Image (tube, rainbow, N blue to C red; front, side, top):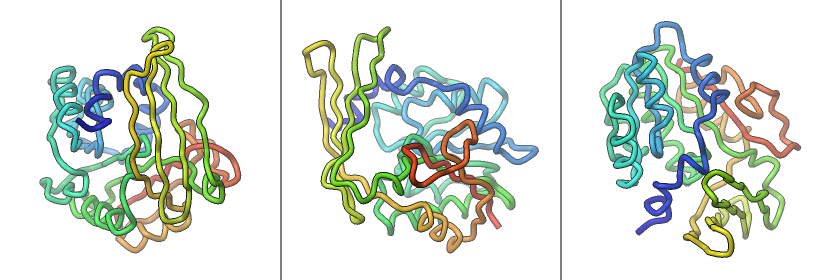
Length: 237
């Protein structure tokens, strides 16, 4: 069973719904938005809120456990087990799409091109594509990087994350969830860092223009030398 399958039941405790994230998404959608895609939806809480607010929310995720949990918790939204690389096979006419939580970092460079092309193909003219990853400009150049432990007091668990063997070509992402001295599970996967300037060029080459680039979901300015997120808002042209 994959790390993400084992993680499904803990996902919302570790990565809870954030009002500021939702406000950022809503504030970035074009006027008249109706259909929205969450590419890499996890357990679907943003789709669930969008559906509750009257949008046609579609969530896709490759992991069957994530989709199982999402479908059970948020029946008003639409969920499909699907690789985000196949997003271009969805019916066209989406008004907006987003991929957050560093999901896009799981894609090798050629796969990132495929995702951008697929999303552009299903967006309506003027449609918006929002992508959030970590600030790779800050991470690259280091041999390793350890995140502060994330303690979920109410859930009684702590989430540990670390990057090792960092290079321009990729890195190892180590994760561990603990309850006291007990390790509930741990995993290791490959991620592919991409400097922000390269990511912007990639999307411009696929028919997008950059509407905004921020350091977090409060729309703080992006600063490459500061540990932060990296949030891109692209528009289909």
